[in-house]
Image (cartoon, rainbow, N blue to C red; front, side, top):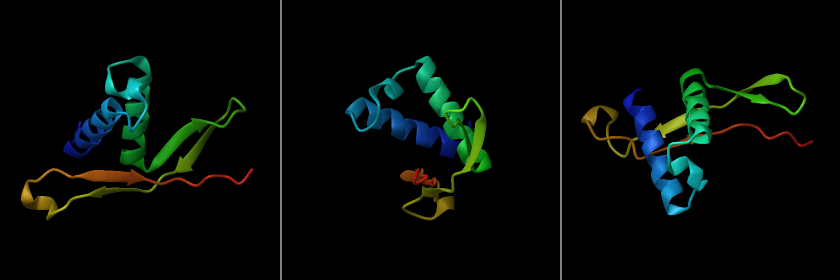
Length: 90
C-alpha cells in the first residue's frame, strides 16, 4: 500500500474511533475491508464503482486530492484528503 493510501486509512480509522466516521471503520471487519478496497480503487483509478440499485454496476468519477501542509517531498506525511463525486438530483 502506498504511503498516501496508508495515511488516508489511518486518518479514517482514527476519525472513526473518535466518532467522526462510522465506528465500524475503526476496527478490522468485512465492512471496513470493503470500504478501504473501494477507497483504494477510487484513489488509484479516479473512479468509484457502485451498485445503483438496479443490480448493475455504475462507474462514477471521483476526483481526489491529498493535502500536504509542506512540500510534498519534505518527508512529512500528508495531513488530509478529499474525494468528490456528483450527486444526482433524482
